[in-house]
Image (cartoon, rainbow, N blue to C red; front, side, top):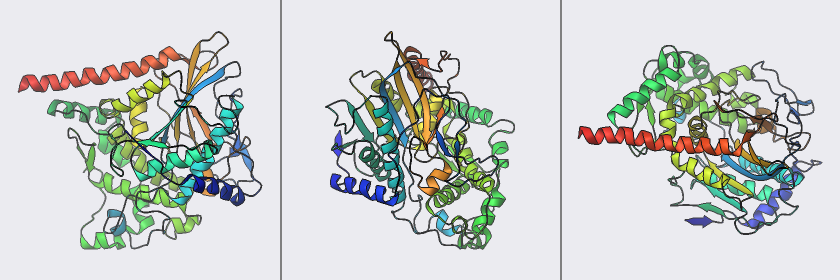
Amino acid sequence: MRRNSFMNKAASYVLSAILCLQFAGCRSAVRQPQNTETAGRAEETSVQSGEENSAENSEVFEIERPNTQDYKLKEVVVFSRHNIRAPLSSNGSVNEIATPHEWVKWTANSSELSLKGGILETEMGQYFRKWLESEELIPENYIPEDGETRFYANSKQRTIATAQYFSSGMLPAANVDIERRGEFGKMDDTFNPKLHFSSAEYEADVLAQINEICGENGIEGAVSQLNYDLLTDVIDYKDSEGYKSGELSDLKTDDTEIILEDGKEPAMKGSLKTACQISDALVLQYYEEPDEKKAAFGKDLTLDQWAEIANIKEVYGKVLQSAPMLALNMADPLLEEIKGELENDSRKFTFLCGHDVNITNILSSLEVEQYELPYTLETNVPIGSKLVFEKWENSEGKQFVCVEFVYQSTEQLRNNTPLSLDTPPVIYPISFKDMEKNEDGLYTFEDIDGRFEKAINAYYDMEKQYTGSLAEAA
């Protein structure tokens, strides 16, 4: 195990001061107390309707939430997706040759956290600090005792930096080290969404499950619903170097190939992969670039059209990452990590930072009810989003758990909206299949802990089933 002091702490404090100057007149970031049934006030951005509102026109996020008025907050475990990063591209990549246009100039190298991403993450950390203070989990200017908090990130720059910026906002008076393991820039085995076993029988069953999840006509049916025409029109695909040279071709709906190999992350070949890479880069550019028209290479796009572009990446994730048989195989180390943190009574706060695929795998493994997140282009796992496990205790000492997504809306991301009691991020509760909430909308700790145990056992049973049959066949 290795700990990394990623950035000079003095620089972190200077950054916080810069943020306050940048957002002149802004209040401290405060989370809406959980004894209300809806999240607090913030600008409303309805992807479904395409309506946009200015930051001055704050409206309520209409989301019913648990009532924790008669409970005391005991512990919080956060699994975060990294914040805004530069696209995963370089010279000669698909993104570079798929359009004749120049992508915006980023403040970071390929795949690394952008300066804007750092600012947004610091805001989120400040918001969590004020919420935890208001719930009396931590005091003002909290400096944790050994073991009270933990910050652990995958060894990629964007995840370490996200954790560092968040910690600077949440614990500005503390000298927080970010735990990481293995070589910098390489995937930590805990966060690495690789297959821990595979076999011909397993691969066939996984593909059957993916096609079933995709609905009528399977993968091809799901892909056929995507608006490839919009995507290619926005980037002027047919005028690109890649298309003219023949290196890239027309995007098809029937050429998706899933590749499953033991010890590797599930992969894909075909048009959906190409379209996902372009979709990802365009949506990130929309978050990063203030000029909406420039972000769309001179095109005037509605919010609905941006949502259609983002949906390509969402379907890619559904096909390649959400099938339970895949998710259990990929997520087992993280399930055990989170379960251990929730069972650690000496811990007050845990922050784990990884990737969207990690959160997709975790939620699929835990058998959550189907959801579609509002006020965001990315309806599955938005950029910078946090999957938050909150442990609450009632007056009789019985513990309960609330699981929620916390994320900045699309407009909050684009506008660098300061978060406050009146303008919180979106907070969206998650529900689990075949589990009952109490009258206040909370699950018992035993039910949540048992669901983790069930998923972990299911992984080992599945491994035994498929590797055992492979060994017998040999």
